[in-house]
Length: 220
Image (cartoon, rainbow, N blue to C red; front, top):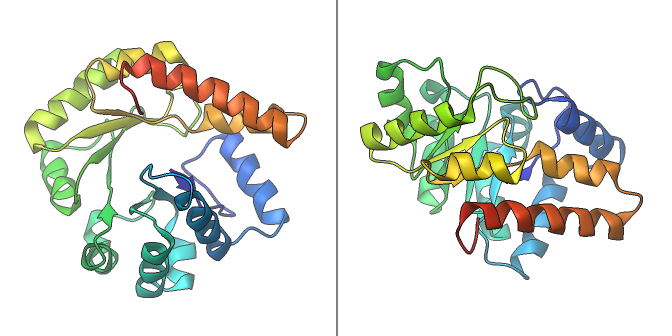
């Protein structure tokens, strides 16, 4: 995930709220995020998902953004506050460019609603482990992993679990049942707590290596 800073990140907890505020104060823009994606793509083939809110996309222009994202090497988008009933034009633009659209499913999502959400997904679903914001502690990650596995069975799509996943032990718990594990706030906190850029890089590399190892797979 490559986060797009936004002034009102309602689904995010304190760590990402502060990160967004810092980035915006220093002049971060959606176009600048695409420049980051372009630079990353010259050094890595790890798939990149833009993660953010719809307002910056609307201001940029859906078609214009999708074209720019594809040219930058972005592989898809996850828009936190865009309901499946309203994602049609963005999803179509993404599909036409060969990019993925990743919708979210919550613990409160009904079975009928899951069918609707699954229909708009182009590859995998993102399961929000709890009713809360990013960075908060999930009440029961083992239960979230079971629910994710059930979603995979019902929809035939891979499911990644995020929100409240912080430690390698959390990752092991989720990875035992789900196809993917998402860790965001814990990484952002390492950057926030660092003394300088080299320290931030070391902290993030150390954490990500531990998280990746906990999946039992070569890349996570």
